[in-house]
Length: 160
Image (cartoon, rainbow, N blue to C red; front, side, top):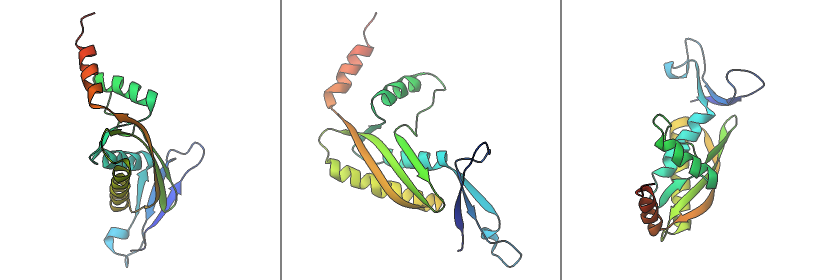
């Protein structure tokens, strides 16, 4: 297949932050290559976020304040789940780079979890978008301790 991926960026254009998969055109070209497919940066970020959350040992995503605001936003009806919280992507013509902020469970091997995250994110993005993932950088911002949930549940249950 001769698809080309190009980044569409620029000033006030409505398609800023979008990658385009361009196929061959004309009657002689296969049907699946006729036309252009665009993939927004937000789509790449969502795929990376979902692929990260699928890995055992990942407790949550986002650093410090982003996690705190995200937790509040999740409690508000219609606030959304924050799938892209802790995910930053850079998408070029044919490649993508991903930066992740994660919180791991206490007791897991951070090296093993990071490797599993990289494998899952790269596999999902390359399979779903056709982009080559050149790097997945992971920042482990915290370790979730089992007793932290018990304290949070006790604090939520208080009558004020």
